[in-house]
Length: 202
Length: 187
Ligand SMILES: [Zn+2]
Image 1: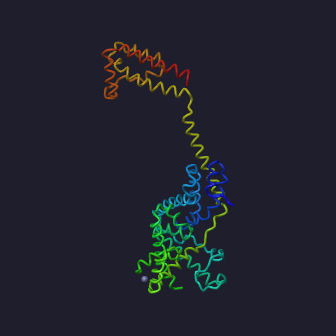
Image 2: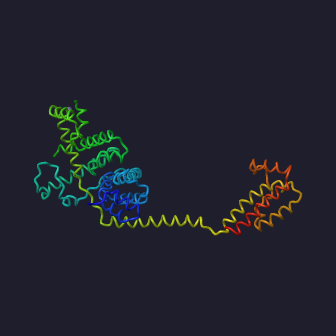
Image 3: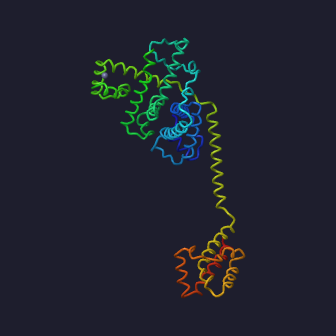
């Protein structure tokens, strides 16, 4: 049975740096994905993820196991770093949506990806026009998410892309349970409205 | 349940967290209202679409780069700490000299009255030199204006001048010589 994050963190607090490395390996992928989706900038995501881990590494002795989850703490720090990044970037330029997470190789690279079009046959991935449709849909969804206001995009990404619980999201965003739920519902409604015209076509 | 209320329950219904009563009311509204039925269907598609977005894989060098950055940070913190330590671990004579300077300047305040009212200015300076060393005269204010003296200090000084000047002089000289000996030996 693998150790809990808290146990690894306690080991690290006692000087075992390998425990921290394991935590990094465990959480790097979701963290990078979160940052990429929230900032809408894939290229910068690894850099910000590393910055997040560095902050955690430095502040590790202040971490109280049991009081906050490692994961919640990680997203909390990352969220603040992302907000700074977005603020700074806002002065430089508006979103560069084209640079967003989607990349062309995701068409054939991700075979677990279930097609949205319910009627699509199982071998749809081998049909170039369906593959193109999928890619188009992904791009449209990514663009729509990127266009949501921060306070809606953030909980939506944490819920629907990171798969966090409402409690975890409430802790990260410092929101009450009711507010968290209504914020996520509102974000999804906004996303639906943005995708409406595209989805009605297919 | 009206359309706006139904919309508020989309997520809860999608995630199966509605209580029994609300579930009944929600579903009967959806059954009757074509608009909401359509909107809810689009809602589900939108949520599924975002849930199924492909994940980015971390680059193979991610952990190595992080390790490198952590090492650099550690070194930086370490060198900052060392610089701080170096700042506090000064040669002993620096501490001694600093204390002498502080006491000398306070002594010069106490001597203020003597410098201007005392009978022999050269005498005072001479005594000072003998206890202070050669740097002391430059620290002594040659001309002091009342404006530059701390108020409390000035009043104490003048109170002393009227009654017990010899005592005051002894006191100051004692202090100065005390520090000189102690710094030479102790620090
Ligand atoms: Zn309705």
